[in-house]
Length: 366
Ligand code: THG
Image 1 (cartoon, rainbow, N blue to C red):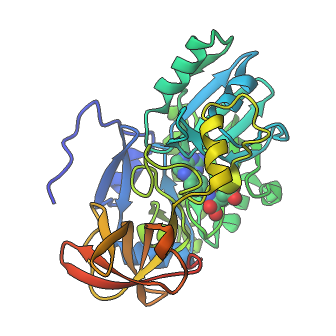
Image 2 (cartoon, rainbow, N blue to C red):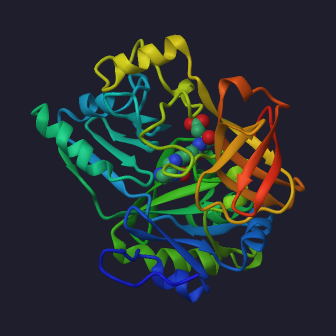
C-alpha cells in the first residue's frame, strides 16, 4: 500500500507524537484527521485489546459544540431520538438525518450543561449542516469545533489503569455517563464509552497542550498492566456490531435500515428534521436492514461493497468483513433485503477473490 502524503489538510492530533513513538504501522483519514488503524498487526492488536488495556488516539472523533439559549432546541432538531429526558452528565448515541430521513452521521451527544452540548461525530462534515440549520432558523446559538480531542482507554484493565490516575471515583461513572476529573490542575470530561465492546472510558481532552502529558502519564501508570497504544480494531468492532458511518451506512440509508430504529422516537421527537419521512418508514418498516453475516473461505480486505447474491440475484451487500480468531469465521456486516434477512439464510458473497458462501446470523458475535 502507498503512504498518506503528510499535509495540512490531513490534520495531526495532540497525541500523534506518542502514536508514532509507539510504532503505528497504518493510518486512515477520518474527519480530515489521522486515525491509526494498526500497531503490531490487526490480530495481535485484537488479542491485546481483549486481554489487557489500550490507549487510543481517537481525536478524529471531532466535537461540534452547541452553546447558547437555543442549544437544546437545535440538538433536538438534529436527531429523531427524544432528548427530553437527557440530563447533564449523560451521553446518548443518536442517529442524525436529513429531511428525507437519510443518515448524515451517528454521533455520541454529550450534554455538558442545559445550554451546552458536544456532538462527537463520525466521519462526515456535520459542522456545515449544523451551522446551516442554526443560521437558517435564526437560532441564538454558537456552533463551532472546539479544541477537544477524545482519548479512549479500552480493554478489561481500563478501570485498573484509570483509577491510578483519577482515583476510585472514576469507577462510579456509569455507561454512557460522564464526570469531571482533575489532571495537572485541569478539569477533564471522562465518559464510560468507546468504540469497542471490551469496556472502558473516553477522555475528552480540552486543549492540545495536555495531550502528550496525559498520554505519557497513562503509559507510566500502566506499565505492569501491559498498557499499549491501540486503535479501533476492525475485527472486534464487527464482532460487536459497531457500525461505521461511510462504510456500513450512508446518506442513502434510514436509521431503521441501520438497526437504529430503537434510537428513533418519531412520535415524540417534536421539531426534528426528517420526522415526516421517518414516520412513514417507522410505520411501514424497512425493506432492507443491517445483519451480521458469517462468510466462509478466504477473504481479501473489504475496501468496497461486495454484492450479496441469492441464486445469482443481488439481495444486498457486505460493507465490512474480517477474519475473527475467536469465532473461527469471517465476521461481516451487510445490508440485506427483507426477502433474505432471516437468520440461517444461505447466500453467496461476490468478493474480488471470487464467490464465497455466507450465512445470515441472528445477532452479532459480542
Ligand atoms: N465515541 C465518541 N464519539 C464517536 C464514537 C465513539 N464518534 C464517532 C463514532 N464513534 C460514532 N459511532 C458510534 C457507534 C457506536 C457507538 C458509539 C459511537 C456505541 N454503541 C454501543 C453499542 O452499539 O453497543 C452503545 C449504544 C447505546 O446503547 O447507546 O458505543 O465511539 N465519543
